[in-house]
Image (cartoon, rainbow, N blue to C red):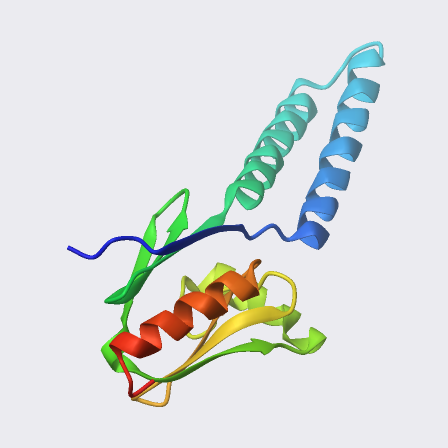
Length: 166
């Protein structure tokens, strides 16, 4: 069995969406307090507002807790997206045509939304602008974000000794 040689956990927080949801929660709580301070609060309005605040709070927690775990070893790369509906993907080094550490342009920020919503399809994740760019033998391109590019580059160089065709 292959040993884990390099492991990285990435939080896929979308701060712009979380700010919007947090603002809506705050406004909802302020509105709820205003309704409660009134002489005769409307129960249907209170129930509706409380339900919306509860749903928004759940969304905020979910978007805050999404994370990607990338485990690299000499045989493959295992990707897991957690917490709810765990999504897994396994990429074998034999299926990789080329690999390199690249700097992505800032326009590729939208691909983070793609990865979060499409569950580990073509673009996996991106932390900062540095990622491991893999070109598969079937011409699929995969970008796996990395926060320690020097350590990952050293690991990929060791992998190239096992698989010289990379």
